[in-house]
Amino acid sequence: MEALQQAGVWLEAECGGQGTCATCAVQIQDGRVLWQESRLLSPEQIEEGYVQSCQATVQSNITVMIPETAQSASDRGYIPDIAADEDIALGLEPSPLSRKMVVQIEEGILRKGGSDLQSIARDFPPSQDISWTLSPLKGLPKVAHGDATEATITVVNQDCGRSVIRIESGDTTGRHYGMACDIGTTTVALKLVDLNSGRTLEKASAYNGQMECGADVISRIIYSQKSGGLQDLHKRVLRTINRLLNMVLTKRGILPDEIVSAVFSGNTTMTHLLLGINPKYVREEPYNPAVTMVPMLAGNDLGLHVNRDAVIFLSPCVGSYVGGDITAGVLYTRHHRSHRGVALFIDIGTNGELVVMGDDWMIGCACSAGPAFEGVGIKCGMRAATGAIEGVTVKDQGDKVDFQVIGGGKPRGLCGSGLIELVAELFKNGVIGRDGKIAMDGKAGRIRSVRNQRSLVVAAAEATATGKDIVITEQDIANLMRAKAAIYSACALLLKNVGLTMSDIERVYVAGGFGSHLNFKNAVMIGLLPDIGLEKYEYLGNTSLSGAHLALISKSHRDKLLQIARSMTYIDLSSEPGYMDMYTAALFLPHTDVSLFPSLA
Image (tube, rainbow, N blue to C red):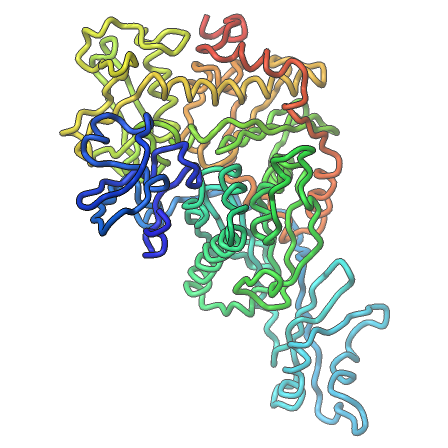
């Protein structure tokens, strides 16, 4: 793997090169490598010369074939979409982190014996104490002694006061831009925003360049402890952000120097990696992150392609596993919701974060759901990209399987939503039992048994884009059941801590890219979500990005964001008595207590 990386070839490595997955498997076509055979590869793969590249040592000149499934998402060229949201600027009076002011340069006003700065600053109200950064001071002589009769200065609000960061000839108040950005473990999403109106001008998203160093936050924390690992992860996410930013700026004809403020939201580990801060202690007792409330920064502090003195605001985190993406998500949810009462906010991704909120209180937690919902750790799993099976219908007790593929055409694998639909359909049709085991006797042509573990063929080799069968194994089903049990039991525990039950929930808000493909009915059927009536469920899209957008354009929402982080009660599930009992009880379809799922009884 290291040799391939040095050659500029990056592979999927869900475990970050720890040898605990097989996504980096490659085929040795010629030459010798030294490695210990692993049960993570099938006997057929081993026979064909496949090895785990992170565990294999080169022994001679070799020729390597890299299968499409091992290529990194960025190499495959797929750029994930971001959910469109409503125009959240409607009804808001913009009060961004920066503002533009026009000052007059009238003939004769530049007095002999004075300075250009004194002359320009005469238009400032006496009560305003505004400092200047070096960059606009350097541009001051050209503006003050040019032909223009007025100039525009950009003032940013910082923790230590207000500063002028830019000066331009003429009235340029109509060109006032900022950026909102959600740094997800899998996807980075970005908005270019007109700060005068608060409206979105452009948006773009791409896979986080850190994905090649691990699929989840734990594997990336481990990777960060390698020599040069932290700096590598820091540079990777910056490259992703800057590439997206350059894309939208070029499309609109805007200069990077015109981006004068930005708001970022991300989980606690992503926040640390963006800042280049060691995240080691996020996952070690007593689980104290280096920082939760990040002071305002300048553009050049991070190496962003924005104005070097642009003010950078990071959404505050609550704890090691409830980060700024969740506080921003709750901010947007509270801005969006029109009713009062108990609500559940849930962001299902590599980790599952949940917040139960009332009108004037909130309690949150995070659970290690694992990356199964994103197709990781599943034999034929993949992320929700072109070629992924996202919808499934099972008929004739498993003999007939119909599916829908993202982008159409032949399927390449199963994404998380497709996996949920498939398991729900198999359960509904009696193909699998409540324990997740394939219950049929094998007479159906789709059912196979290898090493005493059964699997079901979803799509035969001749019908797939890879030329290989797409199957679901009992181990895949077990991985999904562990993930769904973690989510459901975390929800149950939060409610128990405030003396409530599932029936007290009046509204459920589902966030994140995974939720856009999620069939709520099937999610209830497998016991992932509570059975409280489908009419109570609502998908809100990328609430982290929408919350960052609100904070970018509105001071009152920035204040609310900080208040959310300060007031949320954070529950650490690892230290909660009774959580493991709840988790174990949820390791069945839909649950050991069927009375909790009255619509399925």
